[in-house]
Length: 589
Image 1: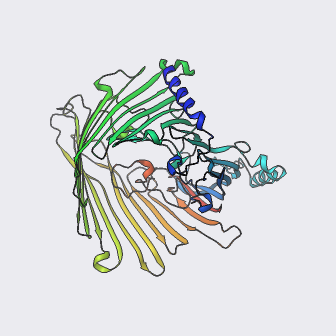
Image 2 (image 1 turned 45 degrees about the vertical axis):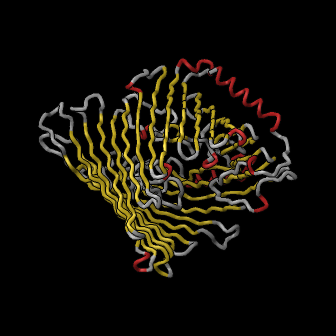
Image 3 (image 1 turned 60 degrees about the vertical axis):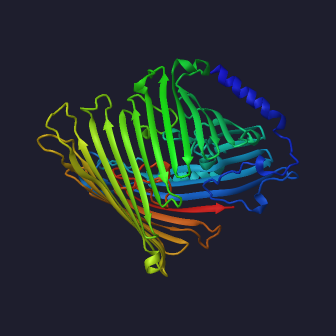
């Protein structure tokens, strides 16, 4: 750990002489653009990188959201079996963020967001046990809300006055690039690395923060070689952690990378090695021809709680093919992962501990009308015994139809189905056989400009079946079937209406069989400040997990999906509540 700190000190010393120097060269090599934050602001020409004669150019804006959230119980809280509809609580929630980012100097970029206010006031909270008086009456709630006006700045900040939601600096020199930050930096956040395995997974919210140091532009290009060197310290894993990589590319022919990730739960940084977990990986890509790629990735984990060896290691190889027009693509991946294998800073689902997996992906475009795809996985769970392990064969065909060339309408249709074949452990029952079953099916219809009063329409349907454990007496029996529906419509460029539903089918008395959510989003209004307005109603589900005005699907990129799916990302969450909410958003730029 001391050696690592020494390296960071030396790199920082290289940075200091040129940190605030104003360069006469206007080359963009010295500029790292900042990605947009949630306000979706694109800087105007006046907010472009500072020239040699400009000392500071910062874009700023204000994001305000205020909404009322009202929840009711649709099942009794004692058993969860008795249906009903009982008003439970009401909240007024509001927050305002002052964001600013841009160039302080040519070498110094800033990305920050200050919470001007952030509060959640309970206006009413029932006592749902019998006929007891409410925990918080409307009088108490109104009194709490009124008292805020006596000191608005203080009482409108539940987490303290003027707290930073995010704060980051990008310091750029020809030799070294340094990034320091914490909070919800989103696309302007930490670096990542993914070969076959995702070994350094980026976070939108980097928590208490990180420090990254990379090589500068004059060290990136050396002839036909591209070099990327990263060293980072962070508190996002354990009490202290680090991640680093060395990535070298030769044209588009060869790429080789080494990564090392680590974290500790030790209280003191000098005791780092007394309670640490580490992972090292090596990645190689060779593309001898434009249509062919060969990849290999090896990883091993070790530390105070992980014993170095095959049980803590993972290996994978992949062959990929694509023709010149990329109308036909194919890849075959084979991996092995021990039971204790871990990435430490990555996505452990990408290595799938305690499995051996063969993954085949094929896609073919037929004209501009049809795309055929196959997602085929063969997985051995429990790798210790090939003969008595649990085998799973997962087959997912995908089809996409594009009808614009046939009927002169922008309409597309997507289909998929998932069929599993499992082989239960032979060691438990020698008569166990391969058991096929349908896991999931889905269909999606997209229409653009089909009707004058319907600019865009997306309709999704997906069915997911969950099964009980296979037994020799009962075989494989369905436990629960979920039917997921989402209809998303843009009636105009300014007005969106959506509907979602989950239908659950099983024999449990606590199951809420029917769930629904519906709402609208008005992107611009003639009210002062031109606020956006949204409203939604939910019953037995809540698909608004990230934003209150758009539904959240299981294939959202933030979830690193491995397979196609049209399911809403809410099957058994918020099943016993109903919500009515309405809100306003001011995006002042």
